[in-house]
Each structure stands twice: as structure tokens, then as C-alpha cells.
Image 1 (cartoon, rainbow, N blue to C red):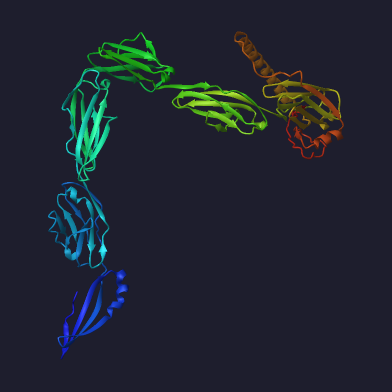
Image 2 (cartoon, one colour):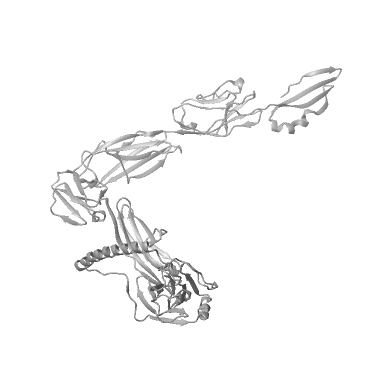
Length: 633
């Protein structure tokens, strides 16, 4: 704008000083800095006089920013709304823009009688006030500061329009003939956004209605049509059905209703009390029904089988687990027909075996897979564990053991637990085909001059073909007894009249089968004699123990006579297991000790034998000489 004036007049020369001012954003200031100097000096003659015009650009630094900007708003048609815009320190022109078009200059919005710019202009307030918002106000608004070259963020004003009152075709009373289906249609027009329609009966929402929407010519409002289909068996005389239309403008909705006049089949509700219920307790079934014409017959059934003893609307029974899977049904009849409804009972019952696991025999390195399925209510938990171990192997029906080893052989338990109801378990065996493994199962004390025993316990699948009890340096006075048990084979070497040489003898137990062999080395050690007082006490205790055992055996014998059953436990050795006693000298025995496949078990005694340590053989010392000395093959 021209802000200077003619300030010098000399003869025929006239000087004009022209100043161009602008409001600059601080970020633009540097770009205008060179313009602070005179831009140009124009000289020209006009009417015989020389005119000199001095043009310069003056940039005024104004730090104008928005302290308030319009925000996105949602408003219902007919309500007022204010879009804020504050620019402290700015005194230039402010424009309000609607969908890209200026509403007016400054505060003059005469073209929009419902629009007003309000606020204190001196403090930079330029708020846009809209009275009685209409659908045409649904637009994007901006507040612009012209001289500062600033504009606010775009603000979306969304105008919501509630639907007109819904209308149900054929209302307010809809009459139907018995057996005919019911079709109801409800309209909710001229809404933005489109109205949602729900159908309500007796306070409950009815599902399954179909919907369609139509966009009106203004491109903003929509009309909604909903059609509800109800079969004849699902309605009754006197029912009131409500159509409720709602959108964001009327969240609580607008509604209308119709009354139904119809003769119908019985409407039945079957209740079960109490639920849940523990197996073995009394449950009451009550069949309540409404019918027009009146009810003529009640009939009850369980799992499809008619219960002839009951003909009223109530049925009482002691429930078991079958009520959980076999529903109880109530059939109600009137002159128009029958209605049947069924309910299962939430019966709590302990685990019941659905698929029984089978014992397995697998080769070493193969996979073993057990399957164990239970049913129970409430939901049960399945746990797989190895007998004697507290480690949970699986919580699924299937237990998979990958690449089994010999130590994996044993008893496995599939246990099912129904919380607060009961538990059940099933045991299976895993037998691993592989070389024998030998260990000591007992420890026995040996005294000079007394009888001594050395036990050798062999786990072997398949059973051992051969067992060898090997001793070095002595002969005679030895007997070997082999007994088969569920866990394996026990080979016992019995020595009569222990002599000092027995405590310096190396004993060897070796077993073979088709997969290989195993060896155990054992040394016998002497035990000191017990004091006389201790011997007397032990003798008395032994007599008492014998007496108790006699009583227990008598009771057990009576029980076995009365209740014969299979007895598991120790059985005689198989005739095809060959047991040998082999005598060797000390040097040969020591050579056996040095074999890498041998294991040495030191039976604890009070005096160590004068033998050097055996390489590559593990040694265990116990206070009683009961280590196994048998080799099986």
C-alpha cells in the first residue's frame, strides 16, 4: 500500500517516497531483508517536470501464532456451535473459509445470516458462531490471517440429522392366521448417518432381521428399511413388538410398536434347577408354556426315549453323568400342534476313561507314543508322569517320548483331575528293548563265619539269555539263585561260612541278551560284631516281628481264600536263563576290572581290601555287602 507522501518540491523536480509494508512471519524475515534498502529510483518527466520516485519495501516483523484453532466437531442439526480462532498480536484481516470459499471479509458475514464472528478483535479473537446448525453446514472450515500468510488446521464440522419417527407397516395391530409367518417392515427416513433399526420383544432384541438403505438426492441423508421375519411358532397373541431407530444424533432412538393377534403353537421354556449339580443329586425340570388354544399334553423324553411315568409340567430325577450328554426334552401340545424343547444338565462328574492307553514295547532309540482320553465335567486336567517321578511330561491326551533310552523304561501314569470333583488315573508300562543294565538293589552285612549274600539286579528287555556270577581265587561254598520280578531279574550269590579270603575276593556279575551285555564289579567287606546287648535287643525285636508277620500272613491267607485274584510280584526264574559261577585267579579278575564296560560297586565295610584302584570303573562303598555280582546275556 502507498504509505509515503510527496515531501520535497524543488523547481521542476518532485520527489515521491513510496513505502510498501507487509506483515512478515519470522521465518520469512530473512528472505525480505534485502528489500529494506531502496528498491529503485524511477525518474520520468510528466507535464514538463521531473518526477523522482523512491520505492522501498518495509518488512514489519510480527510474531503472530494461533493460540486457538478450530477443531473437528460433531453437532446435531438445530444446535448452535462455535469454531474458535485466536491470533494474539495480529491486527490484520482474518478470513473464515468454508470448503475452500471465503465466507466474507473480516467480521462482515452478511451473506450468511446464521454466521457471526465473535470475540475481542483487539486481542486477536475471531471465533465463528453458527446458530441453528443445518445440514448445509456440514463442511471443512479454516481460519486464515491474510497479512501474516497463516492458516489454521482444517476443521471438519459434521452435522448429524436424527431420523424421522419410525413407522411399522400395517400397525398398530397386526393380525395373523394360525400357522402363518409374520413379516414386519419398519421405515426410518431422512437420517444422517443412516439409522440403525432393532426389533425388541419383551425387552429382548430379536435377531435375524434384514436391512436396506437408500441415499437421498442431497447425497447426505439416508432412509433405512428393516424387515423382520418370525415363524408362526415364535409369536403369540398379545405380544408387542417394537421397532427402534437410532443414530448418533439420537443414541436413545425413536420407536414405535405393533401388537400381534394370533393363535399359535405352544411357546415353551424348559428350566433345570439346580445347575450345576453333582452326579447323584436330585434335579428338577420345569416346562413352562404359553399356548392359544390351551395346552392339552406334556410329554418328557431323555436321549430320545420317552419317559412314560411323567405327564405333568415338572420332572424330578437323580442325575448321573449321562444327563450331561443326553438331553432331556419336554414336548407341549395344543390343538394346533406340538413344540419340543431340550436341555442338557450341567452335571459335575469325575474322570471317565474314553480311550484307554496301552503298554508299549519299543526298541532303543525309537519313539514311544501313548494315547489316553478322559471325559469329565467341569473341564478336566490331564497329567502324564513317570511313576516315582514328580516331573510332568505332558498335559495332553498324547504323550510322545522321542528316541527312548533304557532309563525311560518303567511305569507311566495318565492322571485326570476334575477340580473339586474327583480324579482318576491309568498306569501303562514302557519296555525298552536294549542291553541289560545291572545295579545293586540291597545292602547286606557279612560277618566272619556267617552266611553272606551278594545280590545283582538286572533290568533287561528282552530277558537276559545268560547270567554269569564270576569270582576270583576261591571255589566251593557258593550257590546262585535267580528270581524274576516285574522290574527285572535278581541274581543272588550265597556264600556259606564266610572266611577272610572272601573279603579279598573280587566278584563279577555279567548279563547278556540279544542287544548286548553289562557287568558289575563288587567287593565284599567285613563288618564288626555287634555288642551282646544290641544282639539281644535285635533278637527280641525279631521275635516280635515274626509274631506280627504270622498274624498278617494269617489275615492275608483268609482274604486270598475268600477273594482270589491275580497276584503280581516275584516269580520264579525262567528255565531258559542260564546262570553260571566262574572261578578265576586274582590277576584275571583285575583284568576284568580294567574292562571299559565294567562298573565297580564297593560294598561298605569297616576295613578296605588291599587292592589298587581299578581304572575306568566306578566304585561305591556301602556299609553292607549287597551289591549284585551277576552278568546276564
